Image (cartoon, rainbow, N blue to C red; front, side, top):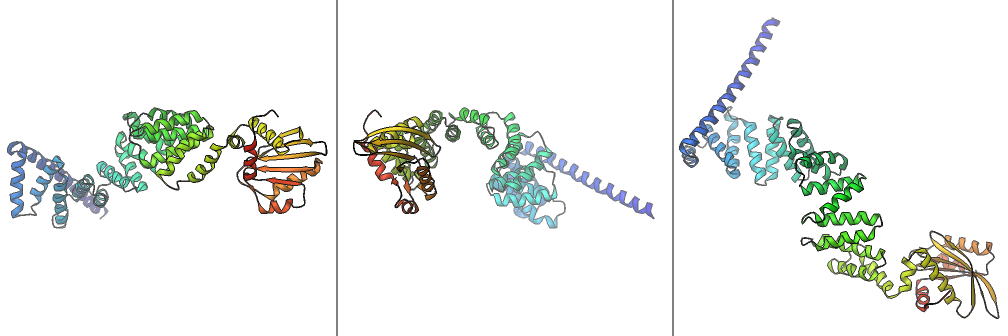
Length: 453
């Protein structure tokens, strides 16, 4: 009994294989006959003959397959879709129709007509029937990529790669998908393989540089961005990225060079130009070139009102641009700042003899202890100069009060280019502390002239 069943299974399997082989042979024979007919009659004559037959019998499977093959070879995608859609629709009544092939070609036709949803629907059906079809997986992956469905695109493209590992197009598409998913480290291996085949692909080069930058390979990324700076398409973006990297390294002169090269390109759109000019303006200000930095920030204002903190920056630095001493107070190096603070003390005690006793430089402020005297009085003063433009809280002033007491100074003067909180003002009432805020500081700075301190 067991042997009988086994023999029956083997016979059935052999029969299935035979039928499949017969079908393949028959298809090859039909294709061979079709090619022979095309050579004999000519393509246009064959199409006309097929159209006449279809006018009488629109569901003639053999004729539909023949004319579909002709349209497919000609890449006449609209007609390819029509023929294979008809074959697919009648396939339930015609078991000889290869449904996987019909839906594959429907999917290809839809894709090349940019009907991406139709392409996805057809190709999903096709690879369900023939999961190891390279072209089906490849174009389905492309379709998902166009719809920004990156996870499904990666799945299809990895399947395609497993079928033909050496295909360079798959590597490039996989790298692009993974890059879009921000899987930068994984994307790099595929981008590099694709670039081995197409080293002049500027889009892949740019993506590789961004991925390297995100993976901490800044030096290599910067070299690629600089290499791409002259490129008409990816040059402006590469200049922007190179400028950002130079900015982070405080290499401001090279950052300015990057941004200026970007703006010389002809194809910089407004959105990108705004980003570049905003960064160029800020970089120039960081180099103490406030007047030129303001030029670019004002251009950003004109191009897009309310962009980031541009309005605040223009307001702040326009004032600085008119007051050189205020620039020094906010932006200069430590030695210039301390020299300015010494001048402020002399202005504060104008007409009195002032002797500097001690200077301490802190990360947040500079403290200077001095003796001020005239014929009527003498006192020891401690000044604290803050450079921040933020609001100073009472904890700072309480600590400053303790410093005055411990150092046995007669009075303390706390100066900021920003402001003090309400609680600070309440705390100093009745205590030997004077608070100097931005408006009063600006007046003092305007009074400073060139002097020896």
